[in-house]
Amino acid sequence: SLPQFEAAHYMAMASRGGMIKKTSLAEYAKIRSNGLIAISLVDGDELRWVGLTDGSDDIVLATAKGKAVRFHEKEVRPMGRDTRGVTGIRLRPGDEVIGMEVVRPGAELLVVTEQGYGKRTPLEDFPVTHRGTGGVIANSLNAATGDVAAVRIVGRDDEEMMLITQDGTILRTEVSSVNRYRRASRGVTVMKLDPDDRIVSIAVFVDDRPDEPPADTEE
Image (cartoon, rainbow, N blue to C red; front, top):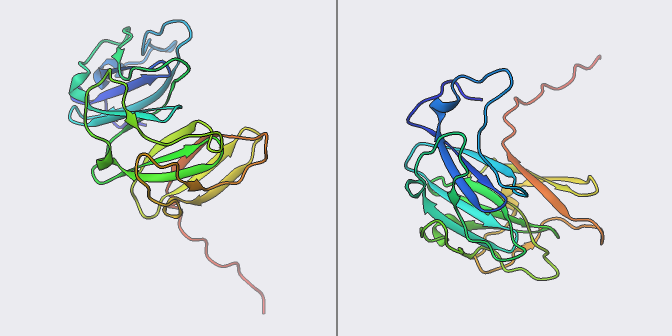
């Protein structure tokens, strides 16, 4: 939800195939009833992540095989709506992007794997390099951890997360309960899964609803 579409702000978009583009918000100020083209995709690729930037942000792309690249958005020149973009991260065979995040100062990268391992790593551990590279290690993976399921930028003390599995199980827990580890570690178990289940998505949120008053009781 956007209150206004400012020309000086952008929508950064990332695809599973490692492409990234950014387009001025002004390009989307007038949406037709049948929609507008937001990005041009090649066969087999998918647009999965969109973030708002102000022209001076860093962007992190993370992959299923535990790689991540951090670069300044100035390396992605503004493009029109009907364009494909440029290479954000160079993927190895069998790998794909599983997350794009816009960096916040002092924040951390929450990494959760398919088999329920998780950790928080300070974003300072991810060097600012260039787009189109292969990235650095974001998570140590093995048969026990499975591939990376999702990443999120976190940093508030009151944040919570929900872990959602393929079989429909949901676990709600505090983000602060996930320990901090360096990039090359695998983390610790944050959710125990059945043998044939796996985590497919996570959601980070802040529950800012007012506390409910106690129910009235009769004497």
